[in-house]
Image (cartoon, helix red, strand yellow):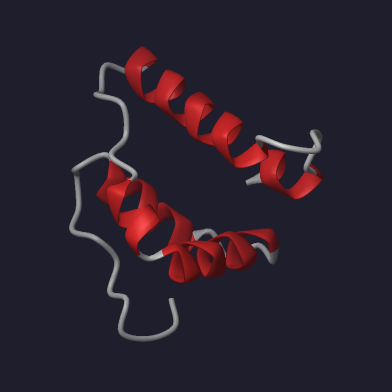
Length: 80
């Protein structure tokens, strides 16, 4: 969340954040994350990022859990 917030690079911040998430997952004994749902529902994913920047990490927690395959994808029918 903080890496996306500080936006240290002109390009590639999201890609770097996903790469770091994959590295942390693999180092913890998990598979790399499956970002396909994030790509398919980019508006809701961006909403979760904005919620996280406001201190509400619940929505992003659900997105990450779904990408790790430990939970169903977030309910995309309404606000997170």
